[in-house]
Length: 289
Image 1 (cartoon, rainbow, N blue to C red):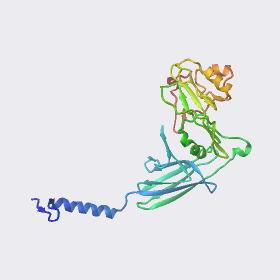
Image 2 (cartoon, rainbow, N blue to C red):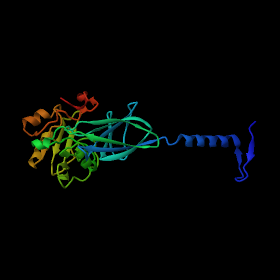
Image 3 (cartoon, one colour):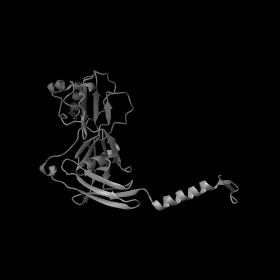
Image 4 (tube, helix red, strand yellow):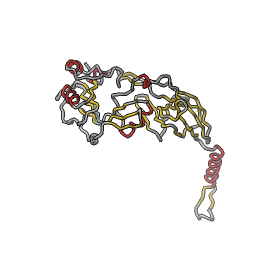
């Protein structure tokens, strides 16, 4: 039979067995100590603090992002952009930590074991194996859909000399776009720049595909149908005002026409259908040739 007693100080009925169990659980939790660990990560390139892409994976293969950073999680790609250093709280255990930068750098990777309640410092120095700038070559990515406020960090993390962010993405569903930038470039530092006056016209399915119009001083009228005006007209308009036209992919139906009329400056061969962990091979559903 369960016994009950009257608590003299509180004036309430207290279940003696439950009270005893609660104290036992509390004592057990205190004895076990904290259930989390802290990883303090520091990134360098040739000994100098640097920004880079960071992957943290536990023993089961599960990725872990760093909440205080710019993160990306799509199509099996999960990473955090760390600017020199970052701290993250994780369950105790063993982790693989990998830092990657642009194509002129080799990855840096280490395995670390985190103990509960203890901060662990991990230093990753990313080796550079070539410097194309010294040979007169400069890096860039002509098709970037990322938040404008994140771009200064992203171009440094990937070591892109020029990173154009697409401000207006036209041809799909109607939406409110931010004001078109009044300035073409934002200088991040002497070797990294963000290009801001960029637009993409993309009409998939029954449409003719996409073109990316870079360094265009004027915003395009978003009023367009699936087929008209043709991409050719947008390319001509952009080039008239000093813009640069990227054909985006060689699979689009508009490519032969635009090439024949000489309005294409570049074309993406390794384009955004190629992801780190998969390749999109179902191009027909998007309206390819």
